[in-house]
Every structure is written in structure tokens, then in C-alpha cells.
Length: 167
Image (cartoon, rainbow, N blue to C red; front, side, top):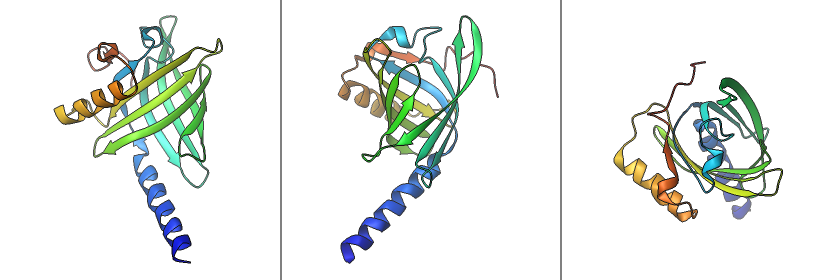
């Protein structure tokens, strides 16, 4: 009985933490094992607008801008929570998305994309509630990037390249 109660309590705490992640987020840095995916007009050169986690439904909604053929497009995609806590997302192929760290005004995430040609790309992202990121948060993001096998030179600064329209 105690094990069941503790499992339910842990589940409720995790759900509350995810719900707290819902809100306005801005892309600060993205790294990719395939730079083509995050170059200008690349499908993962995304400028987040907001994330909405719904633990009751087991979903996360992504709202973001991406430039396609030189024009900004506003996108909305939904991820479905998997048993392991990651989210399955259909966007430019199949994706497995997870938040690996969150604190205060930053979110670090990891995504594996398998495109329609079967090519696998690892991505990490650092997102903020504003563009003020501490050195320690950036170091944590770089460590996560290295841990996922992405070279540090594949980190793209989105702050300096942000010409995205505001929602």
C-alpha cells in the first residue's frame, strides 16, 4: 500500500512540475548533429513561442515560428507522452522529445529526429523566458550537448539572429 501511495505521489509531483513548464519560451540556442537542420530556412531553426504541457491528457503542445522559403510560418504540433516520460512528436519526421533540465527561467531539451529518409539527427535546445541566460545555465546546456554526442561547434546562437515576428 505504501509503494502504491508513493508511486501516486511521485506521479503527481512530476505532473505538477511539467504543468509549471507551460508558458512563454524563447529559443536561445540550438545544437544539432546535422547543421543542415538548423541553418537558415532549416526545419529545426525554430523560434519557440510557447509550450503547453497537459499531464491529464498526456500531451505537450509546441507553438513556434519557422522560416520556409524566406517567409515566417507559425506552427503548432502536439506531442504524446510515452511510458518513459518522453514525447512522440510528428514534425519533419518522427521525433522523441524530452525536457532534461528546467529551473527558473530556462529549459534544456533533447530531441531525436528521424526524417522521411531515415536519417537520425540529435538536437539539444536551450530555451528561456527571456534572452538573459546565466553562464552556469549555458555551461549546463553545453554539457548536455556534448553528452548527446553533438560537437560544441554545432551550437547556433539564436539570440543574435532573431528576426522572428512576435505573436
